[in-house]
Length: 480
Ligand SMILES: Cc1cc2nc3c(=O)[nH]c(=O)nc-3n(C[C@H](O)[C@H](O)[C@H](O)COP(=O)(O)O)c2cc1C
Ligand code: SF4
Image 1 (cartoon, rainbow, N blue to C red):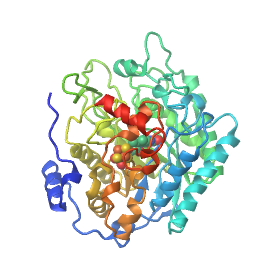
Image 2: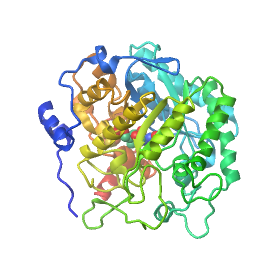
Image 3: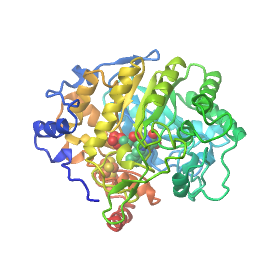
C-alpha cells in the first residue's frame, strides 16, 4: 500500500489554487472569495437557550495532560484557558475534558472531580476567571461569551494512574486488544453504570457553582457514553435496542436538570465512525482492520459493513431536540482508532499512521456530515469540527459554511494551541500570521501519548523553549 500523494493547503499560493483542489475532491464544497470579518456571517450573533452567543467561532475542548494529580489546574492549564479567552471566540465548548470521577480519568493529569468538591470548584473558578479576564484584556466585552465544561468518563481508555485501567461497557475483539482487556475482564455492571448518574449530576452542579453556562455530556471519541451508544451486543437495560443504549444518557440529563436547574446542556457527539485503522507495517500507511461481519454492529454511526451510517445518529439528535437540548458539537470517530478521520493531519502522531487519504478529504467528511445534520435537524445549534487542517484558507471555508447555513459555529481545536488569536484576527479582517498557523505536525498528540504535557511544541515559544522540548524532539525522531 502506497501513501496517497496530496498537497497540504498551506502549499497553495493562491485561494484559487486551493479552491481547485477542494472542488475536485467535493464539488459541493467551496470557499467565499471575499472575507467580511466581523460584519459578515462569522461575526453574526446567534441566540441559543436564551443566551446570545456573540460570534460564530467556537473553541473546541482541548485537554493538556497538565493538571495536578488531584484533578486541579496548573499554571499550564491556566495559560491554555487564558489563550481560549484571548481568541475572541464567543463559544468555548468545554475548555477540556473534565472527568466526573477519579477512576474515569484518561491520564493522571486530567482535571477531575474528587470526593471533595471544593477542590474542583475552586480550580474551575480559577480557569473561568482566567479565561474571562483574558477575553476582556484582549479588548472584548463579556457580552455574548458562553462557556461550557465538558464532562467525561474515559471508559475503556481510562488510565487514572498512568497504567491502562479500562472500564468497559461492552466487549469488542479489536478494541479489547488495544485497551488491554483480556480473559474474563468484567464489563461495567448495570448498577455501576447507574451510579455514574450521580457523578455526572454532582459534576454539573460544581460547574454551575463555578459559573459555567452549560455542561457538555460528552458522547464522543470512544469514551464511555459513546461506547454505550454503540453497545448493541450488551445484554440488559443498557444495551441492545436504541432505547436501551440511550437510557443512561437520558438518566444523566434528567439528573443534571434536577440537581442544577437552569444549567444548559450540550452534547459533543461522534456522529459517524469509520473502520478501526492500523498502521501497515511495510508502508506506514493506515489501513482498515478487518472485522467479522457475523458480529453485531460494533459501534455507533457505522453499519455492519463498516460504512459510516447516519440514521441512528439522526435519531439520537432528534431525541436531543425532544429533550430540549439545542447545543451540539459534531465530531467523527475516535483518536484511538481512526485519528486521520477525527483530526485530519499531514503528519501522524507517534502512535498513528500515514494518512490513507488526502487529509482534505477527511475534512470534507466532517463538512458533509455536518451539512446533512443541519439539513435534517435545523433547530439544533451545530458546531462543526475538522477546520484546522485548512490552514491559510480556514476563514474562507468557514465563512462560506456559516453563510450557507451548513453549520452554526466553526469549531477550532489545534489552531487554538498554535495561534489562539486566529478568530480575533479573522474577525478584524487582518491577514493571518502564517508563522503561527497550525501545520498539523501532531506534536500536541505525540507528547501526551508519551507521558509529556500537550502543547504546540513547534510553533508556541512557551513549549518550543520549554524543558520538555528536547524529549519531544527525540520522540519525533524515533517515530519517523
Ligand atoms: C491535544 C489535543 C487535545 C484534545 N482534547 C480534547 C478534549 O479534551 N475533548 C474533546 O472532545 N476533544 C479533544 N480533542 C479533539 C479536538 O477537540 C478536535 O476535535 C480535533 O483536534 C479536531 O479539530 P481541529 O482539526 O480543529 O484540531 C483534542 C485534540 C488534541 C489535538
Ligand atoms: S503541535 Fe502545533 S502545529 Fe502541530 S498539530 Fe499541534 S497545534 Fe498544530
